[in-house]
Amino acid sequence: MTFSRRPTDPDEAPEAGGPLRPAVPGQAFRDAIARVPSAVHIITTAGPAGRRGFTATAFASVSDDPATILVCLNLKSSQNEAFRRNAVFAVNMLPPAAQPVADVFAGRGGVVGEARFEHGVWSSLVTGSPILDGAPMALDCDLVDSVEMGTHAVMFGRVVAVSGIGPGAREDEGVLIYRDRHYDKTRAP
Image (cartoon, rainbow, N blue to C red; front, side, top):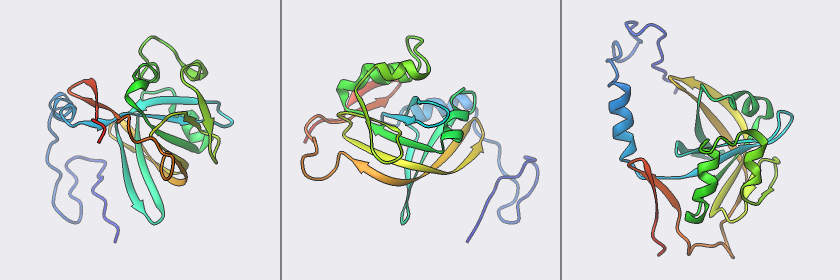
């Protein structure tokens, strides 16, 4: 079943459900979403367009068969083209100790492009996208689709490799989270 309520005209009535209601103001939405505790991730890519990366909390699983995830990147970001051209990306969940790296990839301090990878120790799995050493979990993905929705590109990735799970995985550190516009960490079990 396919269903889409994405009319180009806000007054256009889709076949089911009638016209779309007006959305809440952007600031009210951002304030509400800021209350949601979210794991902090660095999303990376590597390939013909070079290595690029950004900090994100907008990440979710989509399907387990095939294993598919989504991440969101602001359309104003100059990195969109690199992610499209490279057509691969990795999601690196961060431990609390990686907060300084999260800040760099969030653009704090003015570090851009390839220079961001001078912070942290990086390796790779299958696609060549950078994987942060010590990440509690990383997903290596082929980019299978990208959809523009409002202010963001929603990138869908098919997961082709994982790290940080199974025997030997470090589970004692917790995870860096972001809530109410500041960092915190989950508590170790």
